[in-house]
Image (cartoon, rainbow, N blue to C red):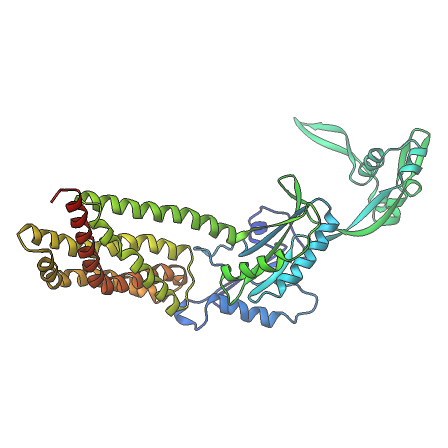
Length: 438
């Protein structure tokens, strides 16, 4: 640990930045770790060790996070966020407690909490409507009388040199310090003064800090961090457990957090990948003036995907958004080597060589350029794939995908692409003969 920064009265980075009220019962401690090259453990491993050491502190609820955002701001969504929707707050709390217990049994889940865990004690005034009506008071009138006595009301404004100062009328501080004082508040009724204790009772209860709504329905959010497992596998187990829970009519689970963000990103990147493949095919079809030859070149793409999967398996890394970006990058790179080979084959055939002779001659001649172009890209990405340095864990999957895909496709496509090229050429010749073009 290089630097420790503590904030008392702020339970989150948003509250520290001024986007929330003060929380006197909370504190926030940020740890800035030394450079990755000077320590043996990652930020996630340090966080897991802190969870283990701090778990035994009595009376304290401690949540440890290892931000994985690019800038480490900690303002990203929780990795796991389950949203429970319904109407009744008590029913929501009961279901949320059951869901939390189910999620706690999923390996890799840490720091479980719900939006109702942070309730604070409050004094509730429960009005007896019949007794209040008998004295000519409504619930609104009772609430207005309590507010005037405790919070006070602006009776008039005092002007001093163009500045207005509120003159607030309220009970003296000594008359509003305890619950007994609150019960003795005098309300103005149509038939005369009425004590609050005659029409209502005051009780201490715990209420939520905020009642959240989405799509006009009350919601309770259950959040958690991860340790030792990837997000996709954890969410799969959570969905399976929560899907087996019996819920009352009108109550349902939804999923947000990083899982939702990842799904949305994968959808967008999937569209980008399809467009990239189509655009590459269209360009190749224009360049080679053929619809069949580009298919042989595009065969390098699924071969590269095999190498990408092997690369992630060997390194133990997960397929995430940076890795998906690496797939899109690799599509254009892996096809380039096949273009170098097949383009020269077409040049030799144009000089009068047969197809097989052109393939046999082009292979050795184009081997060096293909290996050089692939080798330079692989060597450039290799340091990044090692994951050396602070924050390199984010970019390492991208480099791993590119290196694995390019390495495997280069070795395999040098043999596979010419073979498929010859097969498609034979098929094209047969179709042409049947149509009478040859």
